[in-house]
Length: 107
Image (cartoon, rainbow, N blue to C red; front, side, top):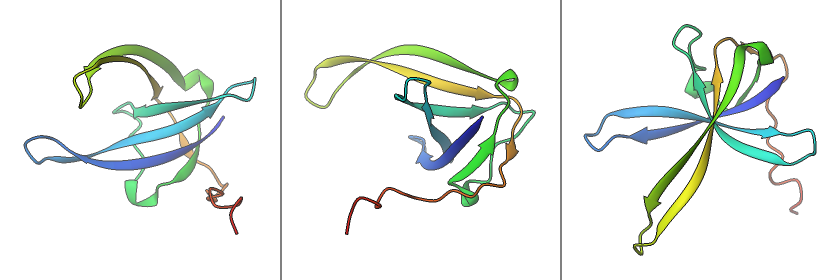
């Protein structure tokens, strides 16, 4: 399957910088799930400077985990969200290049 991978730079509370990777997966019914992409150490992660890129992932070398997390928002309300992670243990960069179509509906 082809997956568009986006890199997001973040920083820990003590100032250490790191990247997280995000993707949107399309289900068979056409709906989409936004997921955090996690790359297992043995396969390495994409170069964040090349992102967004499209990668090829055989479903045999990936799986989705789901976790419910509870947090308190800025006004003090407790909320629960379901987070999905796409775990990847083998991938390759696709020959297909990422083309941003987010502004196609605008003049």
